[in-house]
Image 1 (tube, rainbow, N blue to C red):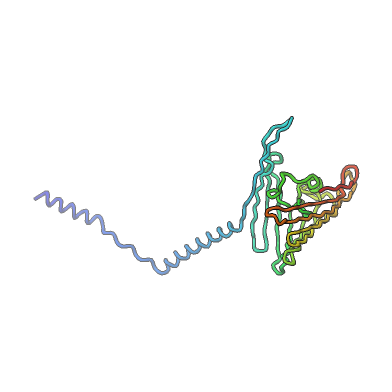
Image 2 (image 1 turned 180 degrees about the vertical axis):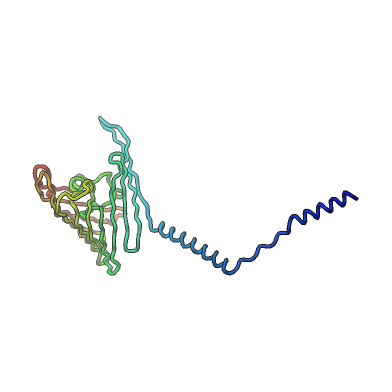
Length: 272
């Protein structure tokens, strides 16, 4: 009997000490509106980040090289390019491309902004910064697409690095059968950070397409100060191309005549 009473009293005490759990109250309309607003802000922020990432395009390539001769046997990285392209708007774009190689370390290859007018079919584009010189075909051809590992001697002699700093206007019309590029440049290439004289160089190319046959004509006019003397730096070029009826077979050519300054005097050169 005493044991039964003790158990009864213990059960009563536990029931008194542990209150029954109440069901959670339903949120008020104000609380629901606050939660929805928080979720909307988080979604908007995530969407903004995704939109920004969708505007960024990253691409690149690596070109390995092995050299073996009487004095050297080594592996190297000839080119290691990474291109960052950010589309600010449908009519504006920023491009930055560094080059990482065994010989030159880290060098800036491209760094420019493009502004394209949307009012005419020509899509005239203003490019400012460091970019490829608007001359000929091989200067502007990407190293990824070139059939040979290196550019020809005439190109590396007249356009070392293929790039310069300045501003360029380009566009295409008549159903994109006609293209043009014209730029005003420092004229020193990319190794020299600043222009060494008060003069600027002019360079340009116009191209015409006649179905499978394309032809381009280029001109360059400028000067350089070498050995405290100003020397002319003029170039003319033509580059025809033919897409033959045979699939994947094309024929390209390029010819350049130039006046190239050097330490002694300016000399006439030509190459193809």
